[in-house]
Amino acid sequence: MTIVSTRRMLLAAGAALMMMTGLPSIAQAQETLRFSAVFSQQDIRAEMMKRFSDELGEDFKYQGYYGASLFRQGTELVALQRGNLEMGNIAPQDIAEQLPEWSILTSAYLFRDANHLVTFFQSEEGEKMKQLAEEKLKIRVLGPTYFGARHVGLRTDKKISTPADLAGIRLRMPGGDAWQFLGQSLGANPTPVAYAETYTALQTGAIDGQDNPLPNVQNMKFYEVMKQIVQTSHLVGFDVLTISSLTWEKLTPEQQQRLQGAADTAIAWSNEQHVSNEAALIEEFRGQGLDIYEPDLEAFRTHAQKFYLDSSMAESWPEGLLEKINAL
Image (cartoon, rainbow, N blue to C red; front, side, top):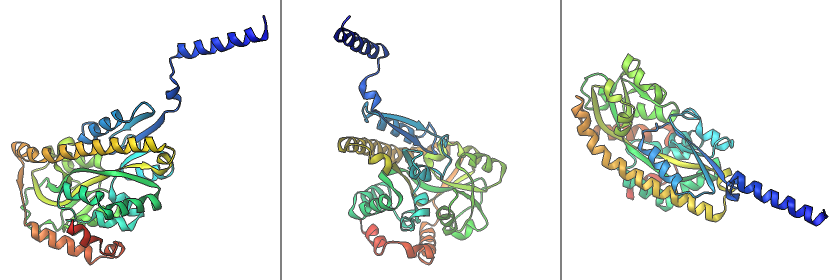
């Protein structure tokens, strides 16, 4: 047997082996995207991420981890920065812990509704804030994921009309200075409790209440251990869909464009679902026996905004940004 024929046999055997294993060449070049979020598999945003992954193409391998099953709440940002995670659903409050300029986006009664939120992030000022996060924190913000206006839900039947009525109320808030400050701005006594532990804390009386958007109340069944929902609408609830700069910079321009497009489409669908869902949930919760009403919203708005503006937190806000957001 000649050297040439031997070489041909080896090449043929190699080709046959590739056919037998059924591994396309593109699979070897797949970019793995591990995504971590605190929300549950039943959340609208879990479906959002499924839609996102379906649009990515075969050169991406999406792996979703929900219910804080991969990283606990509040640790996802650091995991992105260390290269231990590719994508996350990050709370702006977590970003503000490292980037004080972002604390303005966590303040009470800043955005009017979901449309105002999206309009800001698409504006020139919104682009500046996203660019600041990319430069300082090495993350790329793909867009805001709206999940409903936050309201106060209580296990007691005490009537709440003004911030003074929340004095002494142990209100569950996520950990972190920005979240605790938000609770204080409402007049409550904020108590840090993990999201997954909130139901039990309400049930046992370890806390008097929690603040979450209505879809979260439904997903986590908080309504089972609450007596009322006070529609304070104190915060347009949103996180930001984020990808590590380490991962983003490895992608080709075409892949970056495709990934951003998939994110835009999925986020828009999710935002619409949440807006339409909120109105229906009010009637559903009333059917569950909950008392649902609006307090004196102007009293809450005035109290909260003064609380922020008089604090040292406002000193880090970009000059003129509050007025620009209000003008949008």
